[in-house]
Image (cartoon, rainbow, N blue to C red; front, side, top):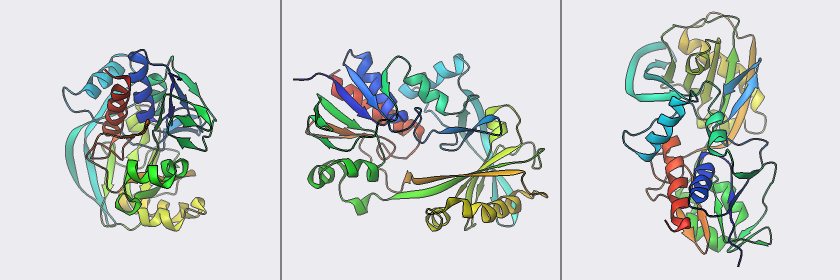
Length: 316
């Protein structure tokens, strides 16, 4: 019987799962259809610098296993405490501020943190998987398979019965789309203490991050995340959303000039609308993990889901 476990998906959940397996001495291979690890913790080089287009930041509960991982990143300069305060805006402009836990960002982009987790692991990029069955991945025997993917992508790889047992009824766990729209100016044209802004009561944009502030290089770049409705209306042609998103961002932050460049990235399955309380799913040597588990949905939840599934599969 083969003893290698195959993890499908090199986002933070898949990386955490594979790292836990490797730490226990369990042979593991990661297959990912992208060119680089990261998943929805994606960074892309735009205008000569890495820009975060996926997750905006991460938090860590004090004393949690994930907090120890974050502390290690901070000590090595891979992550940095960013802010605990964001602005609150509406269609009529900036309104107030709100405080919460410390948010962490990454000078090299959040993708760099996932890359760090996969260091030394057997990761195969640009490898699209077509079928997962109990004990088999694309017809090859495996000890177990892990799908570290959004539910809709995981369902495509499974037969209906196994998908229902692992993931439940599809209608009970829908996923929301978003468009991440990066906008660059020649100079900063918004308040120096902005950091980021939650946008309320706006049909187009719900969150804006100051990417230069969170990365620490001061670049005059904002990244806006649209509402699910705006994203759904433009999934077939995301670039068409650029003008209305630009208008919404300028209105919310009081910016008096258009950006010099705009880049739109589509996330068809950006976030689970109803994440499960359970940490992961496991049946017939097939596991599923990610931010659709271990509610609420956030980076820490995805890491914890993958870590706990990897620990369970290793028998530790």
